[in-house]
Length: 278
Image 1 (tube, rainbow, N blue to C red):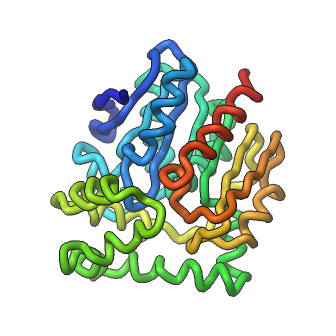
Image 2 (image 1 turned 120 degrees about the vertical axis):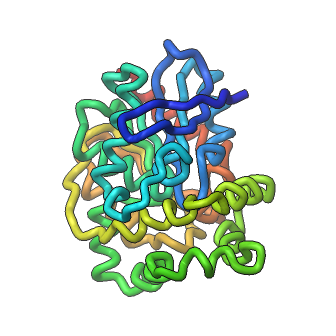
Image 3 (image 1 turned 180 degrees about the vertical axis):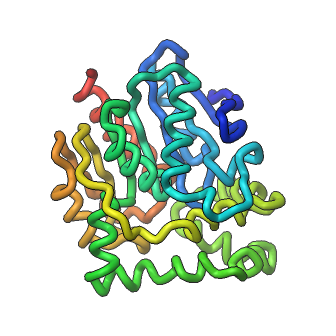
């Protein structure tokens, strides 16, 4: 069973779920939009049982204690800073970093900027950001897949998503996310300021700056039925990783890999960690 904790940082207190012994191998798991730490429930249990100390925070905007109002407070530099602040709280010099969706974007950026802190990187669904940015700029298929971002950046996005008992918000999770998780996410995002915080990740981002190559051992997991990310950027990611690289493609799985295919993802993650013990 995962344990609920709060993690104090200079930005505020992050809510988090943890599993495993505190002296175990440190693994930090970053959730995506529009979810929360509970996305990693299956992985937390297995990692904890494998003598890892796994920590999954509710990220900036999702944790009530770290929910700034300004869009600028959700820039990538702030999100990466949160990762390092959480690691510093636990005294981690180096740690394994795992991210899905927006969490993967933050993980890619952290690994590119601070390779000395990251033992391994596991990115789920979202490709290396430079590959993704190029695909958005040049690939018609990816342009169509990413068109939804403009709607999420609009000033009316909160009202649209929460109308009719959050019907459009609920639709985002289909298919792939278990109904009890959907209910949990929707309840969280109807808290005052929560959905605005989550949407500010999109409003603050323009994906117009290169992060450069990633040198740490990297596992990238992508799924063929991902409506948000096409194959162009997924296949190009290997060009942006200079360290040991493994690409795994899950067939007939949607964007919501950690919850729709938890056994497959956890198996790949454990293999990746075991392959790089130091």
